[in-house]
Image (cartoon, rainbow, N blue to C red; front, side, top):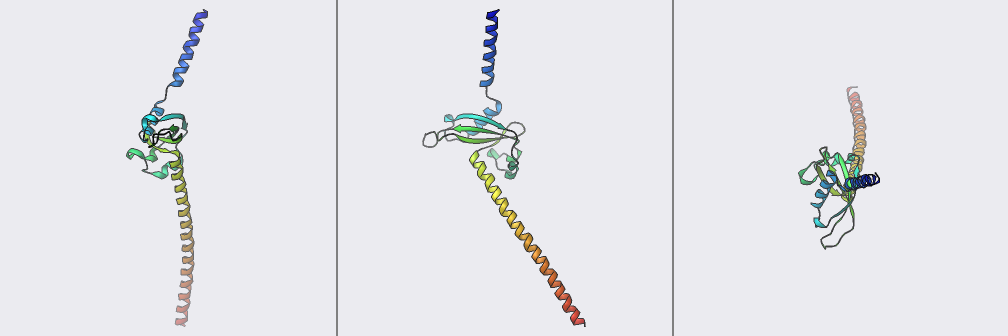
Length: 165
């Protein structure tokens, strides 16, 4: 009886180790996609796979920006992965965060270094601010022009009244 309990405990522990050591399909796909972007794919050391709930709304701002001709705006989920790989000099460059964008089928839509994503979003936000400022300027100038047109119409009407008198 004691031997049977010991075997059961060992079997359960082995099952736990087996289940926790297996990588998910999305992790495997993320590794493959990121490796394709690296200078030395065989040197890649992957860690800290983190599934983010859903793709941020900023994804839709970059229509058509994706790897392999894919559509980034179709991304539904994102996985963050820490990757350390050798650079052109053959030295490990230090771990960098990568984002892997998946569509609703779990296929990889795009990969990019998180710093690239941050720069893209920051650039888009700056562009939005410039466009908002420009639109505000146009709106203000349009209002000034409307006021001026109304003033000129009144002036013309007054001159016409004076002519008819």
